[in-house]
Length: 135
Image (cartoon, rainbow, N blue to C red; front, side):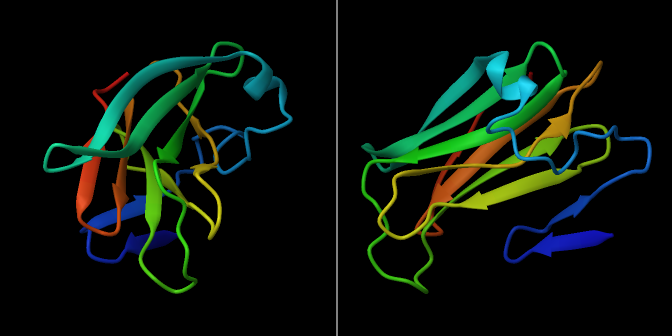
């Protein structure tokens, strides 16, 4: 299965050998209980902070996920709001989340990250970007 994220040129593909955690929500799992914030980057528009993109890692499950936190909550359904992404470098598999109207954050689903590196990136309003370094 391959999904293309519009406007990014990024194809997200899963692999059969990727482990049972790919695509699983971290909240409420043993993976979430053993989480650590590994990377965080500010999302900016010029010099104005729009939010943060965070890369989380589970010490127990060896999984990663992204969390995007915005300064302002999206107010209108259907407008391009804030999105967070986590990408595994070896196969470019990824997960995405959208910040819901009236909320300030979202979490992607997990990717297995044992013995490889991944990164998180986000955009707000389709133009303001932030990307973590690899972990």
